[in-house]
Length: 442
Image 1: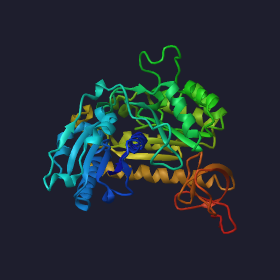
Image 2: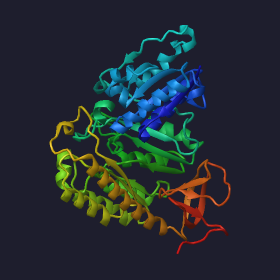
Image 3: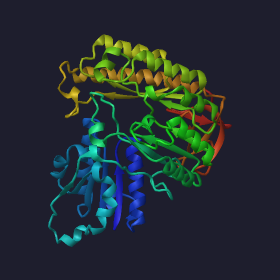
Image 4: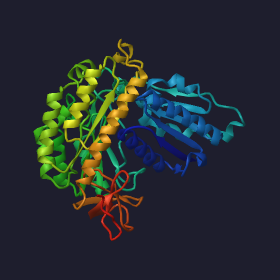
């Protein structure tokens, strides 16, 4: 049976999809190049916004229209949140929540090809349990990393205990839980033999190792785990994905500054630059804490990439709240933003809040922040001209340096190599390697 997996959303979802691909291949399933060529299509979903839900539904309809003989299995966060809704969409055969995602490879061997049903449409089966009871999670197989030929995502932490009033993730991903130290080291050792850069990811990565009773003999935190990885594996470059500002400890930042094997890249979710909004969101920091962490990181890593997630239009966000956010971001050394328009999620405390911001105003604020982000990113890219950056080559004619800027290569280079690149100019959204044909911008 040929299968195809389509992933939606965050790096953790990408890592889940890669793990599923590897595990299914081990069981004898053959990966297809596209959904239209597959007997089984797995949609690994996101539900962080209503538009994410829309994307999933549109994809289900498209798969069913283009490949009506395929069986469709929907899993991931949307499947956990609203399985009955998904089960009513034509073509969906199975809905498997995150609570049972690890069991998918064991469930599928009994699945018959659609042609064996002699034209009868099988009833959709829902397999969803209480995610709060989950203790395990999918991780990439140690012998390969499907889904990314150059920069595999290794998920070492799952779930979140934070009480953010806008966020559906704790109810669809469960409580925070960590991959064991020995398994992390084993995964890294295996992947380091094939890949130059490995991305460590999680739903709340900075909480790795923090749950009660986790390896009490070690008492490691994320910085301690990184030290072990650097000491006991040959990985050439580690990239740390999003870490909450309160988990950007001095020890972690000092280690990042001291080790050339850790990418100079800090991504710390902000959500709002207004303390009153942060308070209503139940975020566990205030702007002064966030600013302190970013400025310390910038002093230690002056050429690093600094990214943030920002939300516009949270219930009750006033013009003054937005002004504070805009001015706060403007003065920080951030190099890129992920700007999200608030999307009310049923089941979250903010869903029924009064003071819902009109949609046109939300979109206007999103546009203004994205314009600000473009200006800051352009200034950061211009500062790279003339510098030599160490980058991993990708399979699309580009390379990615540690400061997270896409570089167009001047000539073909094999993918999955660490190379030094002299930056000669700008592209529409990135950088260009120096060559005789570069024209420096005025």
